[in-house]
Image 1: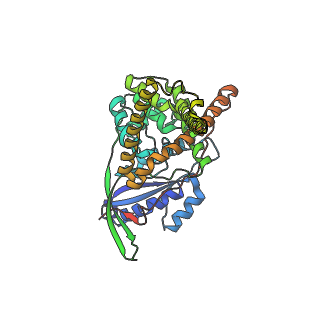
Image 2: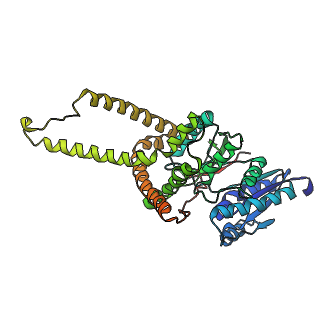
Image 3: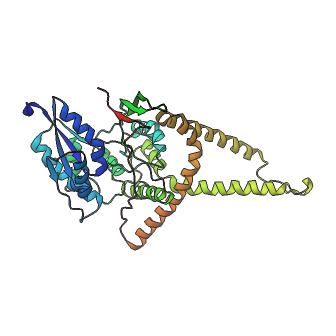
Amino acid sequence: MMTDRAICICVVGTRPEVIKMAAVIARLGESDWARPFIVSIGQHAELLDRAMADFGLVADHHIAIDRNRGSILEVASQAMDRLDALLEGLDPACVIAQGDTTTVMAASLEFAEWHSKDLVVRESMTGVVPCAGVSACFSHRAIDALRQERAGEVFSTTSLTEDYDIAFRLAKMGMREIFVRLPISLVVEAVGPDGMPEITRRSMPVATREFFPEDFRAAYRQLARWLLGIAFQGWTQHGWEGNLGAKYFFLRDRKGLITAPAAILAYFAMFSLLVGHGLFQFLPQAERPPYALLGSDLYRTLLWVNLILLGNRLVQRTLFTTRIYGIWQGLMAGPRMIVSNLLNFFATLRAAAIFARHKATGKPIVWDKTTHSYPFQIASGVARLPG
């Protein structure tokens, strides 16, 4: 009987979400235990309605959003408030949502190391898990506490990285935060080089996936927004609170303001040294000027220490990237560090300029949205859950 089936609320707000949720909704509808209840949120109403029609989906409930008022976080607050009322009325067995989380660290491949190592260590040392670039879940108790803290505003509408900010707000309330690595088995159906079907099984962690902007300007603008939210606004709003471990990770979050320009300065110094050394080769040995510092024992010691640390960094980046993305992407992790340093440099300049203008003029810092695309296939095949 229809009434005996558990209600599963499926929330969609944009066209990419419909594309990714359609198969889940269809599978739930075919089951004998669940009844999908589709809730559409008018974030992008016209595109959403078109995508729903393409998949033959009809919303059971529509939440109207005022897109002409306020920032993207105020839009999120509207949706949260109205969803809460709906949940209380329906009392569903589960709520399924797939959304866009755009706050990560440096570039998309750095997620592997960040989420396989850094967040795990951060949780154990500080108890704070910034929900940046992950599929985050919040308890009803946490949502209620956040709403009460700021008179109904769940997400901070003044922060450019609300998913980073919310972790520290919850920690101050004494809420427990954990980082969960949950792999699931996927069946990948593809067509092989010989035209015959190929079926393979892969185990992948549950996570939000998206492609980082490939255009250089869009990429450093995206990074600049994260720096504004994490480094500048995070410093202003959260200071250096917490134990020694918390202060250490605050330092890691903000060190890019110094290390990004320093890395480019080091590249320039290394390039100048190589050019100068090459030009010296055209001079007779007796006329070549001696190196005052580079020939010292201190320089050689620092060089070896630096090479060892760099080697350790490359090994870790390669291992963690290979674990998630495969050996080819793992081998490319080292060269991509140079690209990341260039992106971070331009992002730091942009973020510092925007923040300085904000402090000097009082002009609000606005959301600088960049375009992302969302993968719906794995490799050259289509993935589905087994069973």
